[in-house]
Image 1: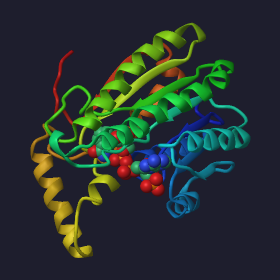
Image 2 (image 1 turned 120 degrees about the vertical axis):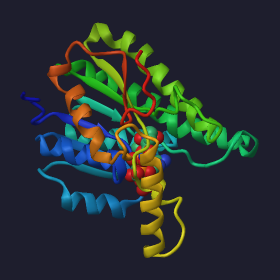
Image 3 (image 1 turned 90 degrees about the vertical axis):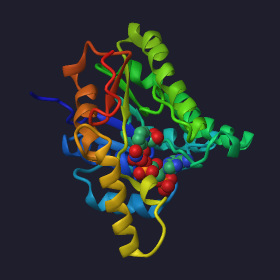
Length: 261
Ligand SMILES: NC(=O)c1ccc[n+]([C@@H]2O[C@H](COP(=O)([O-])OP(=O)(O)OC[C@H]3O[C@@H](n4cnc5c(N)ncnc54)[C@H](OP(=O)(O)O)[C@@H]3O)[C@@H](O)[C@H]2O)c1
């Protein structure tokens, strides 16, 4: 099966680490030209030495801010010339807390990064996506959207908003043949998990093993996800092989939520 992603222009947010980085590497490997962003430049520079191909953009911006989204969009368009695929990947729990420990500001911060970053960048990219044949938007949501727990209700609620927005946007853009889908990962080992682990390198390594083992036991496929577990589906959704797929949320969680509908 040929995905025909060579020379496709792909914007990926929050992509110096974790799922976004895995997506950037995978799309570049397929011959796509990518524009990626994160706040810190050093991991972006590291990615630039690892990635295949030429003409990519590694841009430093805070997508929780209007100006950050605008600056990333402008630089991406300057570098890529157009956008065929937009992947709204950036997102963060920000505060691992229950309802009673969350302030109005925590909810506001979550809203800005988990929902408004996607809304704003999508709005900016639509004119160019309309000019592309086979254009697509992929929003990286979370199983927390449909299966919220007591912890981080602010994050779950914003991801529910993102999943809901995905369907509404898909209907809005269907006439322009822009397909919009969401991918909802389950627990995927990444920087956000790593940041929760305290101690020196060896303490971190053993804590990582323990978390991965304990979390893995709760998952039918018996392991936590890795960022690369998300790339196959994203490549497929970005390709013409998915030309009749839109307004759909795909769960990728090793069977954890197991919802048949
Ligand atoms: N990992 C999981 O278990 C899991 C599960 C379900 C859903 N998800 C979703 O999957 C997506 C990726 O998660 P991940 O765990 O792979 O992330 P991650 O490893 O924590 O990486 C986050 C990336 O986004 C960048 N970033 C964070 N805040 C940013 C901001 N304000 N502006 C611009 N860039 C920013 C980070 O770089 P800087 O820090 O340098 O900015 C980094 O490159 C998120 O939407 C997350 O909610 C993850």
